Image 1: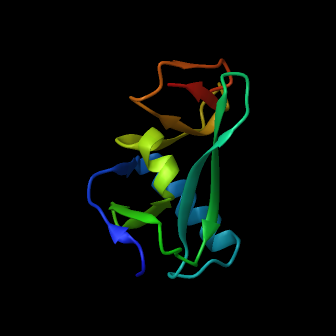
Image 2: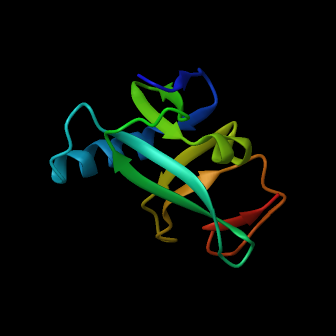
Length: 116
């Protein structure tokens, strides 16, 4: 592990965890894979979330573990994502994955972009 390991910075809900594990299995991802989340410029509120599976930690990565799932982000994104929970909704709104971010001052209707 190259990056610094920090506890209790990023979280994953039970529903999101179940869905991530299902997707990892469907895509043939092994136990060395983790969820990489980042914040990128764009979207109707100025910043957007990006999420993908990865198995290579970078030297400046911030590594969090919640419910046995590693969630990794970069140094810049951690400032926007600290204390955020990755959630999943399979209800009628059909949102899928979304982020419950206490740092966001406003979010757009689609829930995929935000401002601080």
